[in-house]
Length: 215
Ligand code: FES
Ligand code: FES
Image (cartoon, rainbow, N blue to C red; front, side, top):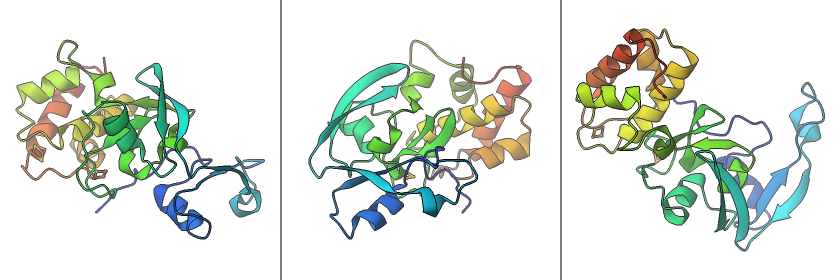
């Protein structure tokens, strides 16, 4: 399955897989924060010295979520998804597979869709995080949200927030998206209820309406 949203866009950040692999020799619950490359064309391995060890105990960190800075105390092993849901009560982001395979936990990091179950909360520091609550609320419906309702694009709803986050990012970067583009946008989002044709219709109606799905 095509899925390329497994980590933060910043090369500084380490993926959950890299974290577990790197931390294994030291302690399973120790966070390893790496320095940014000294120059963009330097070999990453040569630049990637570990300069800071965090943990294994819980740490208080700041995350910028939906425009607000939130303080949260989490162990280094805690994913962004768990931090959002279990510590910050932002439960619109769904936990389904917890392994980067279904897309239900998709949020935006600096405007790019990522599966939040594959990003450590520590690695989300310094990024702009947007969750489904930042995209729309029942009182502040976005055009994409309204189009999902109009086109009956949700059934059980478990995939819907992630589907909408993926689609919103795609429409923001390509306001003239066509059918193939919107299909590609949710290629990593699994819907067991089979709402795909409705999701595509909703997205294309937003494109025809001439707006970018977010505001
Ligand atoms: S819960 Fe994160 S991809 Fe499935
Ligand atoms: S609406 Fe049920 S999984 Fe997509």
